[in-house]
Image (tube, rainbow, N blue to C red; front, side, top):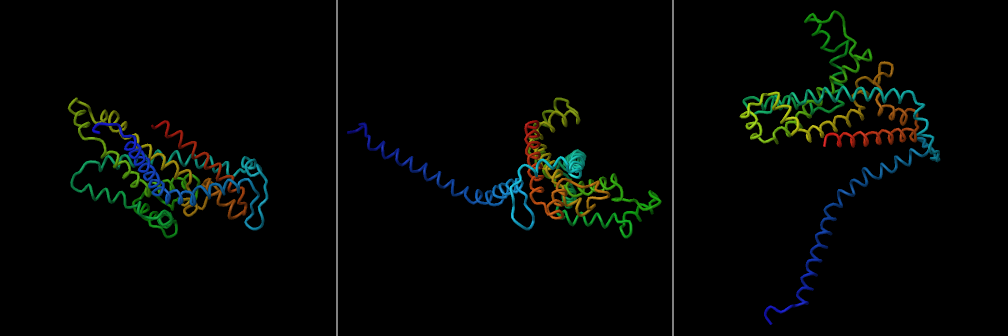
Length: 304
């Protein structure tokens, strides 16, 4: 009968929709499964193991014995770690400010399409293709007082009278390391900011200019506010990378002179592979991870 109510048809339709939803849900789980396995094996399992190690006396050789919370209570009595925290925070603050300023300046410089801008974009980004260890060795060779080319060039130009101790004093070692990091990462951060700049609609700038806005007003009222999500990403990457700094200090300065450039990760490395105290190193790692999570959460809330 036309227009009559058919419960069986509705029931079949409901079953089909339920089956389709179940199929899509299963398909979604299958798509997510490889990533979940990778995250579980490479992140969750090692994290659980590190936390468990931090609660035990875990020598390099021999059985582990539970000693919680000794590995955490002795952190405050580790003078090298306390000094490394202060140094790493100082290094992070200086590096983040300078790297952000240089990267933003380079991004603004190559933002507009004009003849030759592609060459400068490539030239600025090219150091980012060099491995960090190779870059540290390159700077070590260039700044070496015995065979490096920098001192002879400066002496020829009349800028110095005697070789400069580029990594021979705490301040110069920090300055040289920051210069290395700027050279290595400014182009990479420039590319991140350039992506954000090009996502800003041109019409917004044209409307501002038609209203009589100057360059500084456009930069502070339009560019910076609309660039905030990209700046947040760059700052998080910069702060995280600086707090986890290891290669540049281990290869370039080796923590010297007089342990003045020892980072937090270097202390963890020394505890694990020189003192063979894997439990203590794991506790330091957990503390560093907790600090990173807290700091990044605070930054995300402030920059959101």
